[in-house]
Image (tube, rainbow, N blue to C red; front, side, top):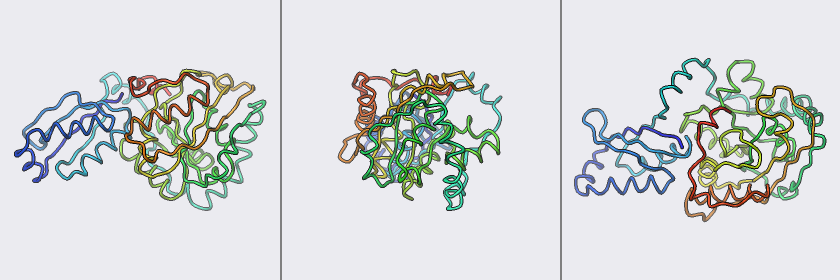
Length: 334
């Protein structure tokens, strides 16, 4: 879980409502719980802000969604700040700066043309060399999905993205963007250009909050499909972590289907900590697109998406709503 500090200013209407009904604040906190957050502590303060609240949420995008919905009530204006331990803060001070804004040109026609022309040299030949063989199952289930859509999968290796993009049918791959950790893939100008042009990745800053949600939503609105790994990092095979709420929130707001996929064998080709990949068999298995229309809550939708990936991998089905979210510390080492 991620902890956020929420600074709130009451609007004139908010002052009136709270004066008439002091229990209104408890109702707002209940809304936070309904949206997948947990209120840890809350204080009224004198000064520039009226309330300071500490909340736990599954991820940055979930926090941004909660802030947007609560602010939309018209009684309070919120500002969110991700909270981290001091040791982590000192580590971040040592990290080189990295790009956090997407390249505006990467969805332009000329960039798409270059990406298509370079796909074999940048992607396909490497997959052919490393995945011996690459078995793809369920691609026929995606024949009628024209896009936009959100593609989700388990994550165990840096080769996952290569294999997943190669396995997708061409009509989805042509307008597809990949969310990527900014502090890993966007540290230098040359590196950021390369991934943005040939993989069509865009940077997502850890702690980026609403900015990451806004850009992803703008892509979906322009009929681009998105690849996201809902676990939030790379983990051991066969141990699927509790999914974060980001894909659920975006699928519900954009009203797009979610395509589940399960990747197998790729962790053996390039285990964590190994720089040089080794050839071996791998597989990508697609499932039926999942619609979240009519789903009652964000946690319920996330549970449904996690279950769809677990079923593809033959993993035990669990009640995701009853378990705590995966610890962000391990994901932070991605």
